[in-house]
Image 1: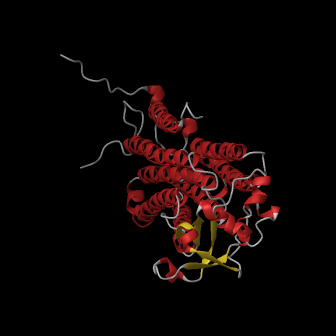
Image 2 (image 1 turned 90 degrees about the vertical axis):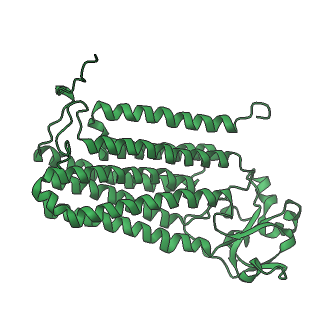
Length: 290
Length: 116
């Protein structure tokens, strides 16, 4: 059975059917991500001063991934344009580039960024004990500057067994640079380049800690929303890569039967891909920069 | 008895999807230009995030303005919303209303007129 209106426009809508379908789907996607973004705004606005972390993500890596997604948006629209101009070889080239960019984005995200977070440790200090750790936190300096206080000490956890063993009473943390010289004005705002934890070890008593975890969703509402939104976004990237790979390997038959049909399929998949890029355009500044 | 729906082609809303090589090739340069603009704006967003605009709210506003501009370019040029059919615009207008309503509900949940 031949499916109607895959190439020609349906008289009453003026559009081929898949285009109406993808836009309705994207409308539902706007609501899905809209709900998550509104949750982000709600949680961030209500966060107590100092409890919405800044500078915990690797900005150069995030910038690189943003550039990769933008590049893939260009290559997918060029793949569509190549089909419209009946240049199949060029279409294959641009489509291969798009798939490569999508996979590269996921590799950077899942193979580097997320694991780097699992390996990072943070201990929220009880309000009553903040004074005891002033030499690491520098809150008097921050107060004088009118900046929110630091309530957490982060770095690399040397004695990871302390997370599970109640007999161990202290965390030994190789401090992030900001806690080695917290009164330095250069440390007031996050840095662009990622700085690995220093060799300076701080001993933090468990009795002074309100909550201590690796940088996982349980760490804070910040990381809970970060992993939820970037995880869902990553699934969308994966979905796009699967569809593009199908079109790359199995599009030839459709092209030979009716090149315009393949062009329309690529356009629909491309619309989805641009939406995924569009979501990332907001994710990047909200989580990495602000 | 109801009349059957009129499905006759509406001339100004019906596109003939015949290939138009000339038109598409004209747009390719524009796509590259938009890609370059998006990359430049990404760099600008990162740079401006390290500039102190006086308050966190001001920095958020600058970053969101740039993000909205970038998103607009993607939607308008890459997603072809610059020349789309009325039905798509109708769908998007309703989506916009609903998503704004969603954000408004969030605002209502957050806003506390007594203590704010």
